[in-house]
Image (cartoon, rainbow, N blue to C red; front, side, top):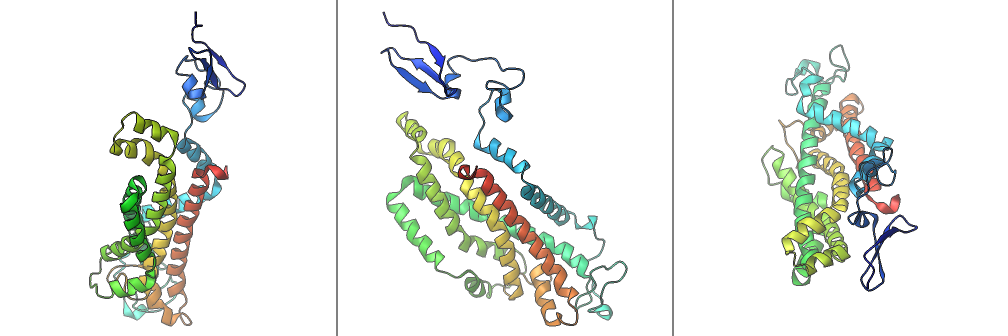
Length: 337
């Protein structure tokens, strides 16, 4: 008579379930727990661990990443800077009561004075007020461009990596063509014919030339994930392509895309300032750090304050987003643990 199924813990904390043929099958801790649930211990759940183990639930990549991020001083510092930028972008009146478009030529190029700590620019506008309002433009352009690039690149790259074959080859050749276009030169050509002073042409240009990098990363990540056993098991059980993409592949392939998009956000802010400095990006009356830097560059010797404050705000913003992206990369990459 065959012995009844039994379960005993092995040396590694997993479980061994006896099979009807007399053999054994190694199960992970979470899988073994489905055969026999043990009550959570008072101080540490199933295994006495911390985090998700304390509640009897297995820890995931995202919970581990969030735990590491909270302990990373680089993430905390850059996060505080970004939160401050977002707040003043939404409510600039919290720290300034001036109007960035209100100018007085009688005060042109004047230095700091009470109520105007950053002085005035060449048109007599308050540099402090324009620096505060310029954060809104940079944050909006950076966030929307990053979201657009992440969505377009992830969809195209994910579909190419999942289906492969003809569509993968076509997308790869199209990606190579876009990689061959210099970004600044492309902006000079494409945006020079645009007369709109809004942010949408600049955002559209960034998405147009920025999606190939995300696409290649998403393609490689999907190709790696779809070869795993759990995806093959889902396919064998008859799961449809949309279900496999949304339930099994996407959650495990999105981490590299998030990392690259976060780092690229700072790059897009710097690119907007560069294009505005060259005169083909944002145009007055839009308030932009790139426009202010361009207007102040001829007066850098006589009135350096006109250039230093918007340039300093731009540098701090770009650095904060790049540091945030580096911290997220370190937290989401298991090889760096």
